[in-house]
Length: 220
Image (cartoon, rainbow, N blue to C red; front, side, top):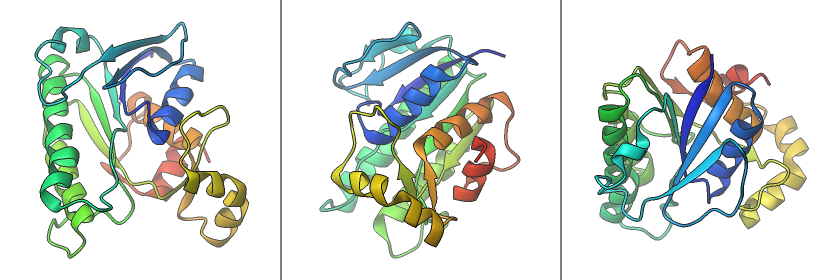
């Protein structure tokens, strides 16, 4: 089976790591990165689509057709944000993008990068966890072939990445220690990317994948 993948967030660390995993995987035939700003790289499999407004995709909807997987890796930190703003950037934009894709690619597998300790009840005290929980819950209701929520925690970047936050430069150095002290919370972005690909190729028996599920599916 060959897969055609749409990736969001390729200008960020998680999206770039997933992109690199897709470009090197033999089952991935082509990749469309949908970005708000240009991502400076080239590859025979790779095409870029600039979408300035993820809340209005009408002008680019036709270019999203013909893909059977989406790895939604775009996201923002909740630090310093009020709930209304964070909800718009996390929930509204993600759901609008997903609804557009489900309309033009009903046979698609959609994978959303959430986070460890996301609140599926949507009622907890932690704002970001509630918003992520609602985002997961409503994405899983959309008419895709299947949909998954990934909940990674500590992730080691992939060699060759350009977009690495300062914190993750530290994680890169200390990753063996994290693996030793918290093996259930640590994995690599290469494994995350492989797990997403395998969700399309093989499926997984549950829609929400915690770190141990991601490692299992990604071959770690």
